[in-house]
Image (cartoon, rainbow, N blue to C red):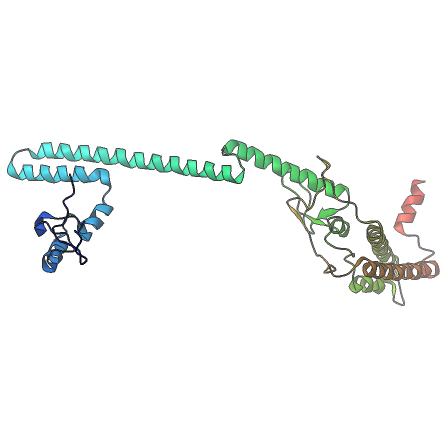
Length: 313
């Protein structure tokens, strides 16, 4: 239906381009008498805000059906159709509403799948759920293989309280050597508390074989860690490589924690070497003291490891 322009004019004298309404004698809502416009809005006229809100709450396909039902109800009152016929109309409307609801649900599902595929395409992923699950499984197996390779190289160990299992990925943490190889620290994790702990085992008037063995094992591990740290600083730590591709790994695999890291980023290589050499001299001093006490106090007692080695011969 062609639009009828408003009969009034604007303040500048140009013709008004508003929609002229017959109930306002060809004037638009802006030029019609205010009292008539307010009365029309309260009644909910076709173009009123009340009617607009009402139409928004009713799906568009149902508007014509509702009008037909209203017409049918009027015809029942007038006796033009029977209540049974009107009931049949209502059943038909229910069927149409059910079909429309299912169509809307199917459309929303299709749109959501299309949106998901588009998002994955933008992110560089594949939209097939089966392929995604397979890719996730392969990625987990690769990470697990890399983690086990770190264990074999002595760069990672199981977290305290956890064990390796074939059913679940191991909970691992990097060792000092692992953190140095990944460029996360320069020094070892040994502190003065570790030296005090070793000293407490043998710096007493009485020392037994059990404490001597514990101190010897701790000092042996400390010697190894300090020597490896000094060697890494002097020649540069070798990069960690992927056991599958041979490429350099810039960060630990998924599931491998970094662990405690020393804040030694501001320490240069020369200062770090001095700290490590000082620790090495202290560990060597403790080793000499431990050997002296063994020769003088425990020589009649053979360490369990020595007894076992001699029995095997």
